[in-house]
Length: 378
Ligand SMILES: *Cc1c(COP(=O)(O)O)cnc(C)c1O
Picture 1 (cartoon, rainbow, N blue to C red):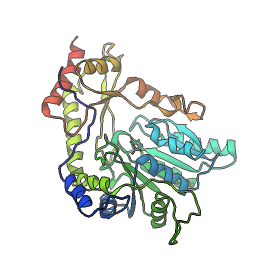
Picture 2 (picture 1 turned 60 degrees about the horizontal axis):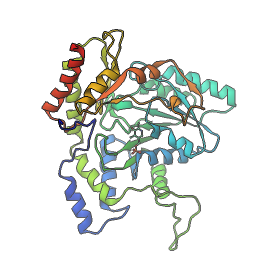
Picture 3 (picture 1 turned 90 degrees about the vertical axis):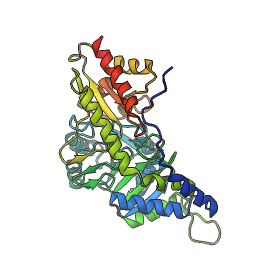
Picture 4 (picture 1 turned 45 degrees about the horizontal axis):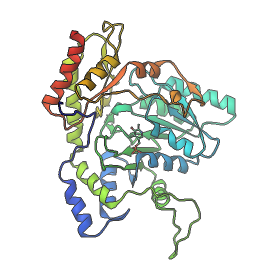
């Protein structure tokens, strides 16, 4: 059996261990401590956002953002349908109602035209505005952020910017995660940098971030005893894991470059194959290319499908994966409203994420490309 090629596996630099040792040497093995503070400072500085709270996950960050925006049971929250379930689950935690909308073809992210249409339609039907908008920069590609912000401002609806896959990406020179009322990041094992599990909440609003730190540590009031005036959460990042994060920050830009080189390699090698297209980006975008994603159009490829390629790769012990299954197609979210245009259903049908780990070797990449070309030669 040939060695396994993963979609995107953790890639340590070695520096992480220094910070972990420091945590052990000073006995800061708690959900607070110098690594947490420094990791937050590093992230805020890197993204150009004023304040940051390091948390247990990106999902927790979205949940706290919704809580602080006052999202309550029955409130409606617009969410991109084409995403990972973690973008939408926290809406359900609040017993609020997700309203899913489709993507456009230029970035595969939220369609601004549908966004405005949906805001108007929900207002007409419910007599009140949606409470928040969750946008996503899928696979690291910036959404049409200018247009989306203009619409959100016009209707005075706050944006939660899910940049879980997009740390290091930019739009017009500004880092993703810095555009919304809140930005959220994830450091899950397969993300561009990882703390094995973790996330962060970003905001220029100091009160929001102080509040997030309080809510994420069980919402203690200021008192010598334990006193609580509201429901809290156990969402704070540990000082040991934040040490991994500090080490990973040192190589983040290197990882972005490596991911972009992987994308360029695939493009050079397989862009000419009939029916294959890469995830596009709009002018002003600088993508971290977290995962290189393609679509395979069987009408142009001589009948070859995404599944043909995925299964051929699997046969060679190479992991690839269909694009995210849209939320409105998920059994758990089926009953909610969806405003569509056909885009994300088609992407789900024809799309594939290729192995994109920054630790892939040249031989690994040659192997992947060899298998794909082999499918087309048959
Ligand atoms: C990974 C991811 C999240 C959630 O991050 P966790 O840290 O795993 O909770 C949210 N949204 C998107 C789009 C993601 O890919």
